[in-house]
Length: 303
Image (cartoon, rainbow, N blue to C red; front, side, top):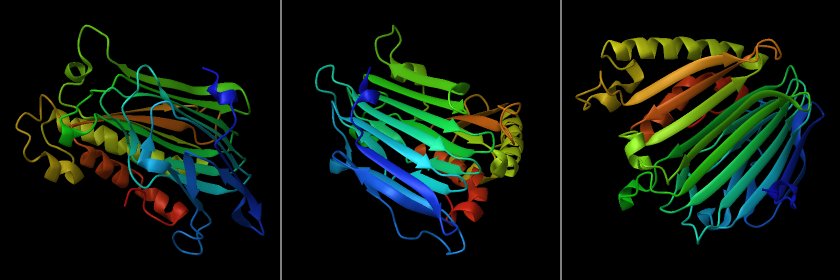
């Protein structure tokens, strides 16, 4: 695939101007659109919020979206969405594609907190996100997908979903390389392989400003898994699991957490992986675990 080399459909540059994070350059074209509010949260918080939208409310078969973010030294930016990213049915073998390349300056922070991707029946979707960081950059990355349109009876009924997330240090030194691939075509159908789980998610936190949140998440995940082994759901998830009769053998929410990058990046990083039976429980998990970002962003993520 050489789509990355094609003309961009969007670009945003954020730099320090008079001590404040400021959008100094922004452009987008069909099918991409950016909404950048003048201010989100208290005036004392220095953070730019960017909402990425697509015309028509989703990504059409054959669409190719490619955009760049340049976050200058000492700046903070949030990239989010207003609703789930819908990927419409594929026409033949056409694949919908989305590329993001982000350069995160020294002491800067990028927080990528979208709603989930929802692929329609037969949809084919590929996304690639590349992040270039410094040793003191900060990154929060949430990447997640639902099984489809439940109200239409679609569960893991798309043809292809591939999501690649790569983080490079100081240019081209690989720090984190990850790909999730879900596709039809194997002996066992995708829906059967996923069993009752309807959402999968990955969360990455990297950098010195996020050290405290990383430690809290690691402790929470450790406690959650211990409680699940004992048959008792975590406190904040009990209302969503009260009707689960076989929780001990098939928990409604599975979470793992591992560390990486401590030798190369100040504060190091963690990777959290989630599988859940409901979208709402993942929203609640993200809201709870990322609550510490409110002081840095001015608004509670996923509130």
